Length: 405
Image (cartoon, rainbow, N blue to C red; front, side, top):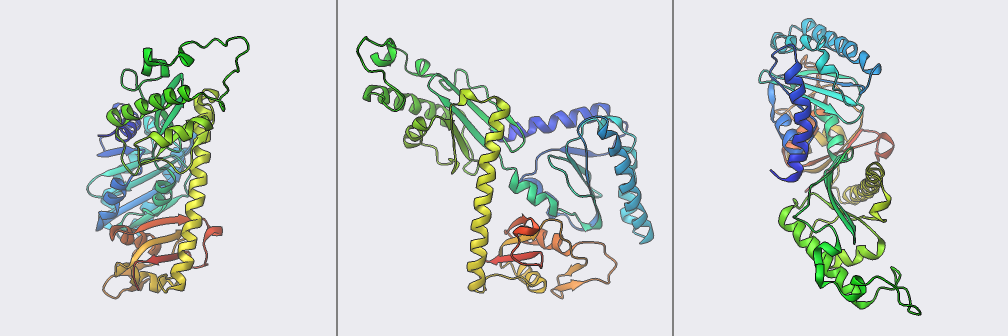
């Protein structure tokens, strides 16, 4: 397991172990905090069997979190009543054990900002979500995964290198938390540690001779530049050796502007973030550092949205995009869709009939066409992107970028 995996396993285990230790019942429950591709694939793979999905906002601290069990109780009763009214016996069997959660104080003492519960005959998966979500109850033959795509795309993991000549730190994090890694004896944390006696006189003897010019950050001697490059190269090589990074997890560098170009130029890493933080890392607390990182990734996400909408306009002109819901259904079934964009909070009642290649609404199944399309497109290798209402280029709540006509 790589560092990112250990980071998320640590976060998840703290919830899961607490719950197992204090829980008043023996439900087969897995509690997680990470939304990754593996989880999305597992959830979308469950089809044609009784499934129940419940989403709700929660609160971290008292007294606000005292209302969370009440909210869950109301959603549980609402879902159970729907199941009884429609005589869905198989669904009733799998939901009833959840009633024990209502009075489980240990469970409700460890809330995040939101909660998602997925129940099937196999097991129950509970996600503690880092953001507020709308209340949703879904009784169907597959899970309601739609809200998770937005959280997945907005909460990508990253590595962060805080680089200064006298202090080097390496972090792993996501949008909501950041954790410093222990790099002692693996990565040199200062120029003196890395080069020792190999340092030039300019660094070994820092006193300024009377009448000599003082070297500023923008007036480094050639020897100082050589030392800095040697130091950065050692740091880079040590990180590559001891902390190999997946190619799809970006490395963000926090350092002074005049150091950034030196490090990027000599580095052998190929996963750099397109934007870095050009500031002395010593000037930032851990909280301030996380805020800076959030600003960086907000800019990256906005840029990607702009590029996505530009791709959509080009695809539209080349007849490689669909807006009509019927066309989208057929394109998804045919595996044409490379990118499916859906509107946050948008739902379309009904169910996709794969044989008829159309939407049906009279078979008594309580589901959401957009959710089904998202799961199908994802399982066929497409990307599912959730946009806010004001970002959507049409009022249909959905559009595609297709691989072929």
